[in-house]
Image (cartoon, rainbow, N blue to C red; front, side):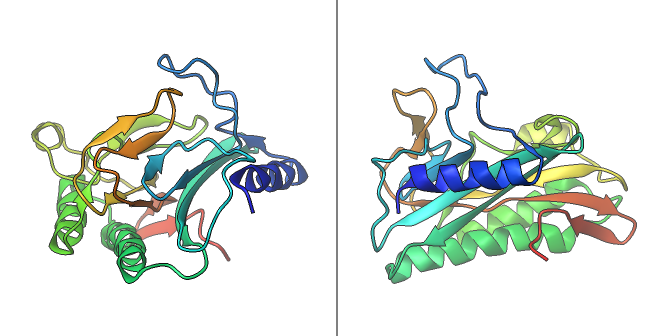
Length: 225
């Protein structure tokens, strides 16, 4: 299976649902071309924005992060998950599991009136206690009729967040997306202007859900039924 074939499948699903792909055609000032894929397909040390390709053939032992967003009936949804391809090493399985749990921590703790820094601190602490690091250069975001809306939703605590914290309120809709590296948190962008990779070449994992803040917690809008 190539990541290009996965992209074609995603395009067919989007069309069949009467939806519009969010990523395809997005422009980046640092890239020579608009993003060509319906999905982002990031393999192993690729963190985010991996470009799907027929040449990118998945092999046993790889881990694949798929990020997929659509607009349906005027509203956007954005989600991601990291998959193990065949038999993968114990270290890679652990990275996937920890990253999934980091997202679950956020979903479990969300409640109106809470400051986001309290949740981000728990997300960061869990990842770092496992020996991993949280990507700093890319964060989650508000989402609604547009893919990227305010506020920025980091997965770590910074001085910037503490100065201008997010107080959760009923009705907010957020795309929460921890990106966790097996090594250091530093990343770099490849010459294509899109694909972000770990600076040290070690693997990265990515999970994301679109959530709506409710009176008692949240609804996970991109959860599989």
